[in-house]
Image 1 (spheres, rainbow, N blue to C red):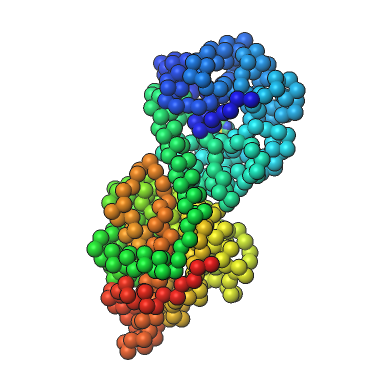
Image 2: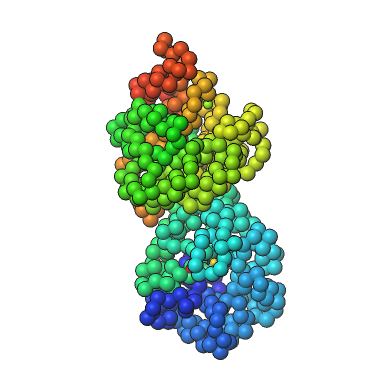
Length: 523
Ligand code: 3NM
Ligand code: MG
C-alpha cells in the first residue's frame, strides 16, 4: 500500500477552472505548489471521458510522485491503475469496492455524521473526508455544515484506529489555521490534512494557492508537535505562574495596550474605566465598517454579548474574523448564553467563525455553552453551587474549545486544557454590583494584549498564543485582589462606593500586592 501524505489534498473538477485555464496546466502547477494527493472528481463526464481525464491526470501526478485517487468509480480506478478510490455515503460500499480493487488500494469515504465515521472505521476505510466544514458554493452541502468546532468530536472516533483524516468544505488559506487548530480532538489528535476544490482549481495561480496551503499545514503540524511536547514536559509551579503574573502587572503600564471592546451598555463606562485604571487603553466600537482598521491597531478584542441586538451581531462577527486575521487575541464573554435561543445562536455562530483565546463565564453560562444541564442559570446569573468537578469541567471545555477557559465564581477556575489553576481571591462586594464579570473580561483582554507585546507574531501562524493562560490568571487575580484591598479601605461603605474604590485601587495596584495576596492552587 502506498503511504499517502494527506497534507494538501486536491479534489479536481474542471468546471471550477477560471476562464481560459487549461485543466492539465492547472493540475501540474498545483503539484509544483505542493499538492500531496489528487482526487479526480468528474460528476458530469461520460465513462470514456472520465477514463481519459483520469489517465492524463495520472501521467502528470506520476511525474511528481503524487498518488491519484478516483472519485466514486471503481471501473475508472481499475482501468487507470489508481492508488485509491474515494466514495460517498450513497456510492458502492467499502466491502464491495475492496472485492473489486487490487489489494493495497486506498479507500476513502466522505463522512458527515459520527455514525458514518464509526461505520467507515468498521468497514476498513483507509481515510475519511470530514465535512462540510465551512459554507461552500462547490457542492450542495449546506445541510451538512459542521463548522470547525464540529471536526474534533468526529476525528475522535478515529483515535487508535490508524485511519487518516482530511477536512473538506470551504477551506481557504484564510481559514486554514483556524480549521486545523479547531479540528484537534480533546485527546490531542489533529487532522492529517485538508481537501480543497475551489481554493486551488478556481485559482488563476494554482501553484501559489497550493504553496500557501502547504506552508500553513506544515507550520501547523510543527506547532502542534511543539505544543504537545511542551505540555507533556511542562510542570508549572505556583511561584513561576505568580512571577509571570507580576511581570504582566508591571509591563501593562509601560506598553499601555489598546483594547477593542464590544460590550454591553450596562457596563461600557465602568469597563472602559477599569481598563484605564489597570494601565491599558479602551476603544469601544461596534460599527462593522471600522472593524478591519481597528483590528490592525488594537492589541486585543473583547466580545461580550450582554445586551447585543441583531444589528450588533455583524460587527462582533467581523471584529472576531479580523482579530484572527491579524492574530489579535479574542476574549469572549457569552453573557447569559443559557437565557435565550438568540444568545445561544450568536455564541455558537461566533465560536464557529473565529477562534477565541479565552472564553470566560460563570457556571451557568459555561454549562450552557458546553451543552450540559448540570448547572442552570437565571438570566445572566448562575443558579446553585456550580459543578461537582469544576477542575475536570474547565480542562475538558478548554480542550473542546481549543482555548483558555475562565470559570468565575466564589473560586475561579482557569485552564488551558492542560494545567488547571483555581484562585480563591475576591470579595462578596463583587457580587453586589452589576457587571463585575464584564469588567473581568476587560482585564483578561488587557493582559492578553500585554503578554503579546514585544513578541514576534506570525500572521500565518498560531491564533491562540501560549501566553493567554498566564494572562487569564493575571486578569482574574488583579480584579479579585483589588476587590479585597478596596473593601478594607475607609472609603468603602457598600455597593455604591465599591466601584469607585475598586477603580482607585486598581489604578495603584502593584505587582507586590498580587505576590502577597494571591491564593492560587495548581490542580
Ligand atoms: N465534498 P471547496 S464539500 C467535494 O462535505 C466536496 O463531503 C464535501 O469544495 C463534503 O473546497 C465538497 O471548493 C466541496 O469548498 C469542497
Ligand atoms: Mg471569585
